[in-house]
Length: 221
Image 1 (cartoon, rainbow, N blue to C red):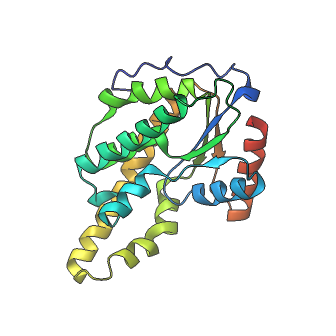
Image 2 (cartoon, rainbow, N blue to C red):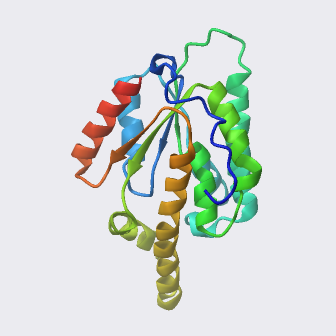
C-alpha cells in the first residue's frame, strides 16, 4: 500500500475465532452488505447491529450519495465511528459478552479516497488500534465495478430526478467513476488488515451470495 500503513496494528489471523466480538461487513456498492446484516440480525437477535456511520452522516446532511460528500462530512463519519468504538471499549464490563455488527467501519477511508479525499495517514492506525481491542473480524463481499454499476445505476438515477438532463448525465458519469475508483481502494484496505478476515464472491444471485456469506459468518462466529 502506498501510504505507509502499518499492517500489524490488528491482531493476527491466528487469533482464536471464538473470541470475535466485533464483525465488520464491507465491500463495494450493491455487494449485498445490508442484506447480509439484516439476515444476521434476524438469525441472531442477540447481536447488536450498529447503524452504518456513513449513512448517518449522508441522511443528516441529505447528501445524494458519496460523490456529494465533503471533507468535513468524511471526517464526521470517521469521528462517529471512533466515538462509538471508544464507547464500546470503555464499557463497564471487563467480561463483556456482547457481539457487534458494523457496516463499512475502517473501509470508509477507501470511500473518501475514491472521491479525492485522502484521510489514510491520519486515521487508519486509530481504526486498527480500536478494532484490535474490539477483537474484530472482517467479511468482505467482493464484486467488481461493472457489476456494482449495473446493480446500482437505477438507484443513482432515482436520486437525480430533479436535475437537468445534461447535469444528470455528468453526475451519473461521476457516480460510475466513483465506483471504479472505490474498488481498488477497498481492496487495498482489506489486503493490509491483519485481523481474521474472509473474502466472499458476491457476483452471484442474491440468494447465492447470502448463503455463502452466512456460511462464512458462521465459520468465523
